[in-house]
Amino acid sequence: MRKKIADELAIRWLVHPRPASCSTKDIFALQDANIVVYFAHGLGDFVMFGNIVQFLARTKNKLHITRVGDHYVGIYDRCDLLRPVYSGITASHTHDGAEFGKPDFNLAHPTDLRVTSELQKNLEDIKCTHICVENFFEHRGSRHRPPFHSKSRDLIYHFRDKLTPQELASLDQPLPNVINTSPHPFIDDMVERRLRAVTPYNKDTRIVVISRYGATSCEKNWGHKYRCREFPKEGDEARQFIKLCRDKNKNTLFVTMEDSSVTGINSLVDHAHNVFSFGEVFSPGSAGVLIPYAMLLMALFRKTDVHVGCPTGPAGVATLFDNLQNVILWVDMFPSWFFEPTANTINILGGTNITTRKSRPGSFAEYGKMAYNNVYTAAPHISPNVIFPLIEHRL
Image (tube, one colour):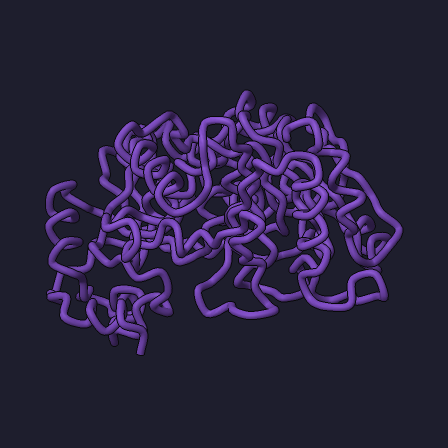
């Protein structure tokens, strides 16, 4: 058992009366309710949910969000329309509480929850009246045409009859996100101090963040599925991309978003070439402060020049930061199924089934006032030679 999970098994768990249940559609019929959305989904999903909160928040209710573990919940810190409710659990992966024997805070039970003492205090402080558990359906572009084409807009489809004509018209353009990305002086300063202490970072350093793989599907990972003579080993595309960047500017620092279990040839970490993992620089054990992962990532992105990666949590967070160039690599799936189009994001589509992906109902490059900046490559792999010209000006 991982040490962090073992440490947190000592957390005090308490019985808490279960609040009333509701769906997102039910929210429109409630008045002066204090609603907690239980959101057992990934970081990219947390970002996408931020695009639809504006519709739910126009009711006379107060909205909050939680899950087992505060690592993603922290992305809504200082958000006016959707407030985080922290549980005090800092472990990144607990199988939604199953490793504690309390899956999903025991939400399957009709009358009682099993919550941490921290969560109980927070639920009492906000006078929680309702729990909203809503599935974030993974339809992969197969269910609705625009404007209900994406994972988040699919949820809007279920309460579309509650929207005003003006709100329905707004669906023909990119939806703003309610996540607060403004500077956080304490965390920003801590992140800079960690960079200076652990890496060769200085005031002239360019930062490139690489997210080569995600947790949900290996099919979408960059440098995994397709091998060739030019890229014989997994991750070789990313390594050659790093070389191109260093040939342009030796004072470039690379932060790779890798799980700590990834080692050896599977890892991009190479200190001799300024490549460090996010965990070794910013993990709680290294930083000495238990700050939710999403908040640390946002602080890093406020200093970042380039993010390159597959469609995963960090890629979604990067869409929120105009200061960086975000390049998302789609070896599988399609951009319009997921994130809203943003001016800082370029999508590169590779793989072998692009025609099939483009033919699905939810697939498009332009619709109404929405336009994705899509680039297509004929090769099944996505070569660094395609990516580098798009970000070279930031180095």
